Image (cartoon, rainbow, N blue to C red; front, side):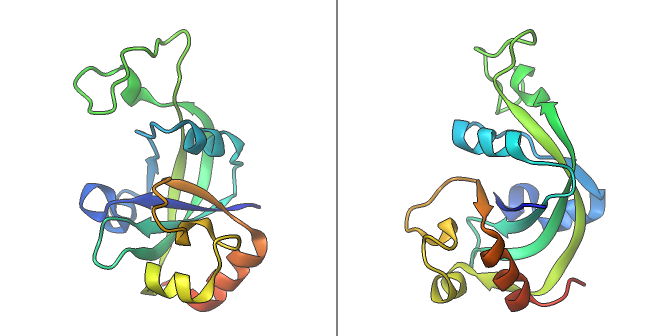
Length: 153
């Protein structure tokens, strides 16, 4: 099982939305590196849910990959802000995965807190200016994160 860190703005789609819905398509990703990370995900992988563009930003919960290799439907919808006119149904550019809610942590682990505990090599999200919305989390770092965050509720 691999671990990931996946960012979303809480006012757009936050942990509360995922908890209410139970599962979601992680669609609208329009960065090739993030897309390629999704392509390597496997069912059962876990993802730390990270609230970005929040005060403070940080890890709030945990998700699990329950479906992979899906075509992102938003790329074909002209009314969607993630519409990609260059993407065609016979040759889609963008993929997504389905995630299910696993739980939330008792307290948010802020970006500042992450920077105190991890180097850039251990956890790429702490790199200043990092805007990538999906990042792999090395196994040793995932174990440390889980110890720092404590049990899910």
